[in-house]
Image 1 (cartoon, helix red, strand yellow):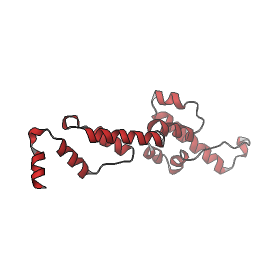
Image 2 (cartoon, one colour; image 1 turned 135 degrees about the vertical axis):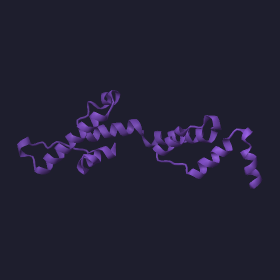
Image 3 (cartoon, one colour; image 1 turned 90 degrees about the vertical axis):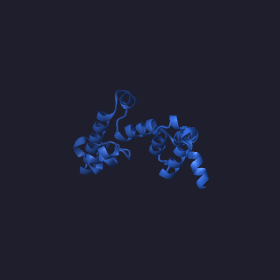
Image 4 (cartoon, helix red, strand yellow; image 1 turned 45 degrees about the vertical axis):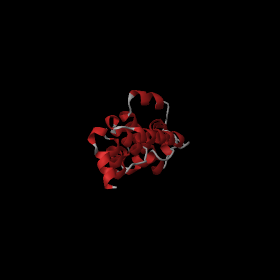
Length: 145
């Protein structure tokens, strides 16, 4: 989403990171900066509403400014820091307990999307250890060590 907003301009991408407040004066007396900020907010607001699905739009339709929409979306998809920590712990638990026929990249991709990664060496060791006993790879590794 950030890349999409950046493609619309750096001011549009920055609009989601800071609250916008409409000047209290009449539209005709706004400064050039206020007009640019208003236009940028409107452009980002329109862009976000176009890419959100119907459920997400229902959650944010009451928002007047793009910063509010962005904040709701971040909490909805990433959660608060506590929710994020719980998701990471859950995914690590699933990662530690998986066996080969259950292996799915959802676990490692889920961790990566939350900003917590497992390096390739760890993944490889986990896959080799989780192979079905008929593969006898575990025994070969144990003999090497």
